[in-house]
Length: 459
Image (cartoon, rainbow, N blue to C red):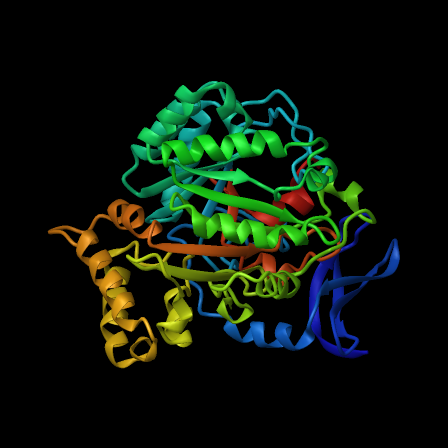
């Protein structure tokens, strides 16, 4: 055993904050925890210790919120919300607008199914608190439960879009309601909403274990109507070892063969909430496992080298890759046409870069540098440059418009995200203190996602 450091985690039995020794067996990374009441326990945290150590070098200086709503006088994380000891601002707010759901997924983190809806007045209060802390929200995600079941869904979306500081609204959904109500889909399209569709692959075996019943037929129907409408779509896959890693080739093929599909989000299963019951029936995947599987999936445009840690959050939480789609349909990994250091700097404090005037100008300077940089050595360099020039021309106007930039760019730059949520076994307080994904609450507090899921939800 070689000790790598110390952090704080939680006891998997009582959820008390406990000291944790970070160690390696020479191959993978583990926690050794000690709880005064329940004794010592070990937990696998991440595969590939060398990759773990490289990833830790990607930490960037924090961009703090304009306002803190947490209480720093309380021990961390009791005063979460964020308090002034939090080390990052909020990139992706997730607002749970309902606990109602038309599925009972065994993999559900939130144990959805109660009959509760967020009121419009409560939603307004959440937006007020959110925008006191953040000068701009690039993407506001509506979640649940199943958010499409909220009776005032369109009014809630309109409330969000009426705030000029909110660039885009996305909805995390299983999509089943759209099969019953095409009018709703058209209304969402009018509002330029991005549909983040829960899609765990194209095999019913995965759905039977993760979602409780076969769903491939219905998922294919949802994909078909989203394609018919041309609505911006993100594929969101819960990945579980021994369950659906074999679906990565088909998922990549779908991402790159459909223009309206703008991104692919992979969330390795976290054994929290209802998903705790899957422990032993599905294996834990860490980010390096997913990257290795994507690189081995056989897609000609995707390799493991395309992925970089996201320094905006803890770099142990996110990894991502961007792909430029040229006018002729070629797929070019962005880190082949720019310097890795510049890409990491661009992503230092937000998931989506270029959505503020200063960042947009920096992005253009990066593009101009490509003439003498790595893009010049690509076999298809002229094609790449023509595509980027057209993209900049399409988004340039007399005044900067973040919504226009987002809408134009998302069809030319596809992304693959890997987001590793934590559970009671893998919880790391150092990661939580850099969380940039949070659940805004009606009282104005911003609850870091994994603090909420592991320590607050249902307790």
